[in-house]
Length: 253
Length: 254
Image (tube, rainbow over all chains, first blue to last red; front, side):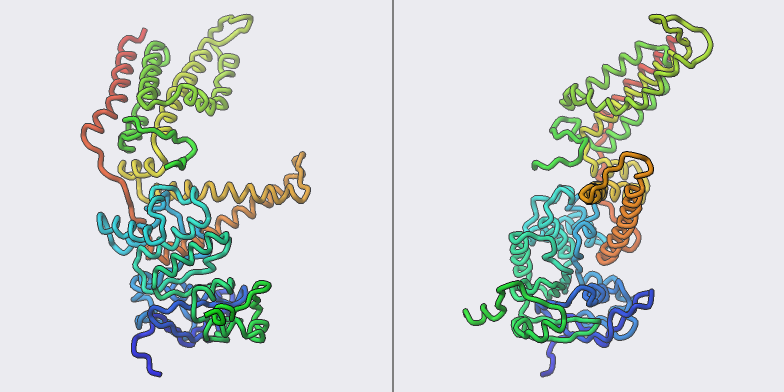
């Protein structure tokens, strides 16, 4: 099959070692088409977050290359790449650093040069998209954890990214907040990479999954097939919750 | 909107609450300067200042009880003033059997009166201005953006850090830590070190999140809007009135 459109994310032979010499990624290859929602699964320490930080050029590849909608992630394109790739970090307290929610959401688009009414519109739209428009004047630390996570999503949506990357979006969320976030993510219809070891969440949101272990992509396929593959799961320290059947939705339909 | 904006803010809709933060800040600082510059022998002037602060507080519909309770913060500083009449030199007077220095008494009075008025003015301002607005105001007053940004980060992460410290203390106590003596402070000190490292690492993560959203070394500034001329006029009327009192006080100095 020949790809008719430029992939939203294209990673070729990406290798990376930390400054202390510890190698984290050993030649990662992956390709995400526009509009796809893909889960990146893997045990702790597999290199998932390290991979994510290469997508917007915070970390620079030791070898290999990353392209976002065809644009190589390199120094001369950093500003554009960082607009196109929005990363939602694991701890919303790291992401929300301005005195009020509204100012925090405005931070990204303001760095892109937006001012005045255009900026205000952007902020309102982004907060609307995550259902948080009424908290624009509140301080981030007065919101619940689930609300802060959704505001963190708004902070990158305000930059109108092409690709949304979420690092462990369900960590520390109660079941309702977890479901509300899923509703938000489904409503966005953006190219999305969900980094998680919450396997039911991956199944719920992402038709396709990648498994990263020890710095390599070891599996790539339909999420339900991967989750139903006991051998693969056991080999990479992935485990479904007790009593969970990944094929149940398929049988039901 | 039910949320408290910060601990010192008292929610309200008075003209003082609505006034531009930069005007309030400038008025407060100027008022304090005038008070400090007033000769302490002019007792009546301090009475006039107190009436002025009380009038502004009434305009903001702050209850005197709140004002009084918050003035308590001043007490540790006044403790120092209490000793001045006892240790001061020069001419002495007997007050209920105590021999006190006259110069020391004046010095103590000066600290008490000027300190109390300054703290009261600051309390009125803090009670009517949410912190983000104070930061906007400082920005409008041409304070460098870096300074207001650092202050903003401090405000933002104060609660986060205090909460982290509290969790660490609970975890220590849960494992039987019950320090009573100085030589048992080791665990507490180690926690402080850990807290510092954690905060430092958080700083790095925050920076990462900022860079990911296009931060290039200059923080954008929001929300700081210019104040109307009559807003300035109203705000500056307070220190102007105080300055008139202060000038008269110098004039009529005995």
